[in-house]
Amino acid sequence: MDRMLAKKEFTVWITLTVVVSSVIAFTGGYMVGATTSGEDEGILLVDDYGRTIKLDKIPERIVSTAPTPTEILFAVGAGDLVVGVDEYSDYPAEVLNITKVGSYTLSTEVIISLQPDLIVSSDLVPIAQLELLEDNGIPFVVLATRSLDDVTKDIRLVGILTGHVEEANALADSLEARIEAVTEKTQAEGVVKPRVYLEYYPYWTYGPGSFGNDLIALAGGINIAENTTSEYPMVSSELVIAQDPEIIIYTIGYMTTTTAEEISLRPGWGEITAVAEGNILSMDDNLISRYGPRIVDGLEELAALLHPDLFS
Image (tube, rainbow, N blue to C red; front, side, top):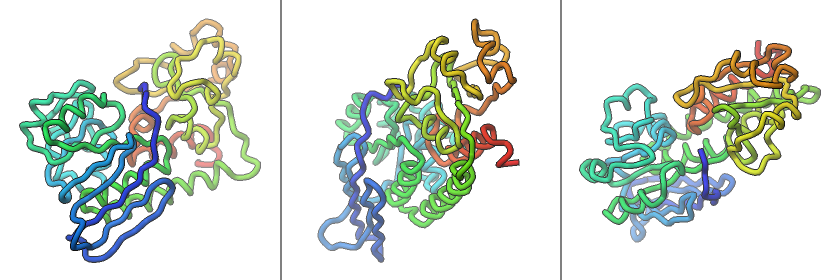
């Protein structure tokens, strides 16, 4: 989960001769557009790594090298363009039959054999591997979001990039409405926000600048690790005990076999309010660690765990 590269704002200008009408949107750090032109054909964008990418046309064969872009591509209706995915991409079910191209270590040979005209990646894949593929004539785009606002922007971006503008905008609009429905309740005046410890691997949690931190705040909680020094810190028992979380949430996924009983039996943790009161709860790791459309499912579930009285 260690993301070493800082996020840079997207600046996107897309010019497509195949688009009949202009579509321009200004949202946060993005400028996204599609228009007709007789001179500047193709797609030009700057991704989260500050790289300028020039494509001659909308991609027809895409390789996704991380679960998040895979889920976004399928969610906007571009799944038929995906010819290769990483080994951890398992949603939606259709991806299970798509050629696997590796994970953190990519199979350059397999990817080249698939003849993609674009790779869509996250910041979990080492940049050197992607640059090697670029040297072989395959451009890549990196999606490296850090907040729910960024998720919906990336969905709109991928919609334009793949020619699925209407589907992407409809999905993003729906997700934004669901986010607002949650925050109208969790951020309302008078709502008491509990102290929360969210653990995705024993003693590893979400710090400032991470999705977990953003989700806890929007779900109406206070992250006990929000003042740590990294996005994904390993914390000590002493810190957790001192912060005395009122709710402990651990995620269930391929990375951990943690249980509520194991947490409750950690030395000294019996005095923590969450443990004493039996507020040790679990969530599907994929709803927090994958920053695609399902992250909103994660927000809704987390909000219901923190404030069952608001979402009964």
